[in-house]
Length: 206
Length: 212
Picture 1 (cartoon, rainbow over the protein chains, first blue to last red):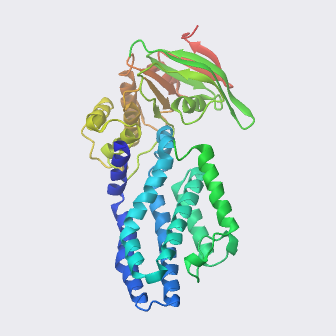
Picture 2 (picture 1 turned 30 degrees about the vertical axis):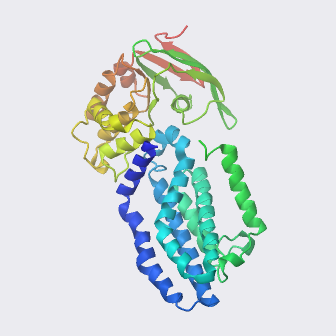
């Protein structure tokens, strides 16, 4: 475990500015913006708040996964480190996820205590982040590229945001409260595929 | 490590429809072995299997107990530009699970072995081609592996850098098993005690003979 912690410290130290940028944006711009919107606790205001929360948290999650795998999957280091990396990459992805959630935690707690009876909508937003991280991890695994994974996920994100992707295939559901989006068959299918993928390749437990 | 014998038994590998390795068997002692052959003979595939980057379709590799992880310098190796030399080796040391208590000393030892001592704080983007290659050997030496795999290590190096590199490899003679894949006759002649010639996925000849 100490070696993973040391690896984490190295990643964060060398990419400090890249990690700080979304965190600064979240707490200096997005949080005050949501504070303003939450002055009236009506559904229209809540929809606006959760729409922007979904969009930005998803983008930040994609960015954090990219930063986490940028060194690991770099063309310079990939081949020489592959035999070691393949044993830890599942745990590394989970570590990236936990780290991003740790960074989002104060914002999430603030939302939880300030959006009244709508606090349950926070959970689907966080579940979306987990699904996006899993999808991105799978894409990066097959492309063997962090940049490729990020490009695919950002493209998919913008297709969802602009509603180009048909509704059953969209992670991002805008214009309605996240809790109103019941898990549909496509989302369950995507989740099942990822879970079977992880279990069959024993990625998470390697 | 003088008595360590690494056994490679009937290693097979198919890539797509092509059988790239058709049952390679070798016994390797602590020495520097050259791996030669035409393009497509299976040299890089064999090295990648030995390094654990790829799985073999058949056969086994027997490494003696306590021999440590295998050190591997691939053909495509570079330094991550934002890291310093020390940080790059620290990255590999973490992946190889070298204990934190001896990580620093291990990294400095590896850098001394490749004549990069004193350059720990240098940014990787400032390293010359030869220094990058030597940093590559340093990362391969972390953990004191019994088997060191070098894939076309002198490609792109000028004469001076090649001399420096060859000196480093020669110093390892007898300490560990080094398997060096190269097209350069000069490297085979100057560095290698034995040369393994691969042809179409099979061992065609070993000069001089190293297995029964």
